[in-house]
Length: 74
Image 1 (tube, one colour):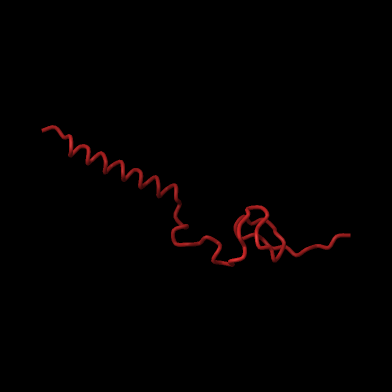
Image 2 (cartoon, one colour; image 1 turned 180 degrees about the vertical axis):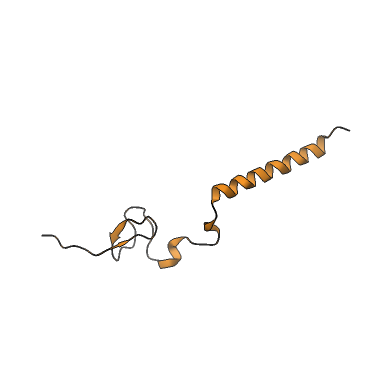
């Protein structure tokens, strides 16, 4: 006969883990820092791929404008 251990849900991967665990066995997240460890900083709410893509497009446009100004035909 086994004793059922109380479980909670990991705040990161939503998998069940043993209550009182300090690290999730599924995603290896640190659970000791409470709500501060959820990664909910100001910058984490932005999609990093989308922001990087837009910055890349902006950089390309600026470089094309600078190249045109430098080498424009007179």
